[in-house]
Amino acid sequence: MNVFLWDIRRSSKQERAGVEELERNGQLTRRAPLPRVELHYVVTAWTTDHGDERAILGGLLRTVLAHPEVPATYLPEPIQGLPPMRVMLARAGDDQPEFGTTLDGQLRPGLAVTVVAAIDTGVFTTAGPPVQAVQLGVTRIDSGRHEAFPVRWVAGEVDDPAAVGVPVISPRGTARVNTAGRFVLAAAAGDELVVETTPPRTVVVPVEGGVRI
Image (cartoon, rainbow, N blue to C red; front, side, top):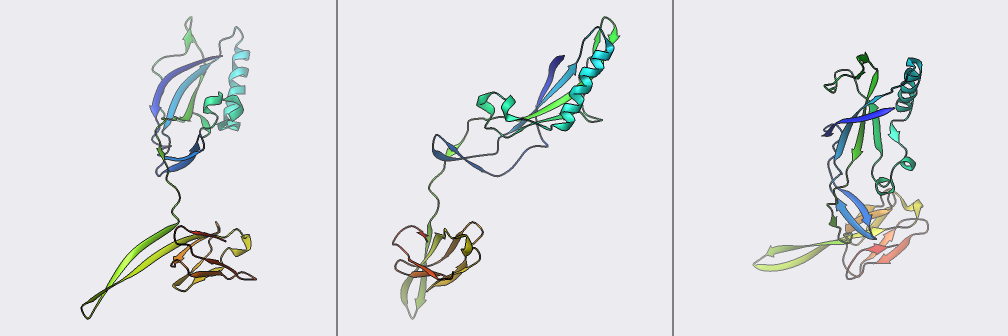
């Protein structure tokens, strides 16, 4: 079996937007989604028996159709941690190489196979610590007096799965625990937060940072 790489292109169909988070050497980092590249191959079989050629190509055809991704165990170790490598057959209307699969004047069958691989560019930025609190300042003008009212939003996390959807109450507002066990609500240092589980759980807001219950 002969495998010939005839074209390399950046994939426009597999592009992704947004930001990804991953850990590198124990440090949380962020990067843009890895670019995908299409590797276009032509696979042919050259034997003295035409039946053997058809059997080889038929086996490859069934394998590609049955396994759209290359198992990580068959990949070199440096790229095993990348997104799965996809394999697909060329479709009708796709570009084809400008050469014939001939030898000694005999036309030979071939399969056009495309491999879509993610390329690690090595470009990333170190992520900062997670946001635990947001504090704003609001000023009220009343009869010529300026009075500042600090507004702080505190992030919290509850380690009880039964708390999902349960209200969290502070003297300055309410929130609900989301499916990840987290919540954000207005509070100030020294306020008592109450998670209305059974029995209720409480925590006092620290001067800095968020809370964990």
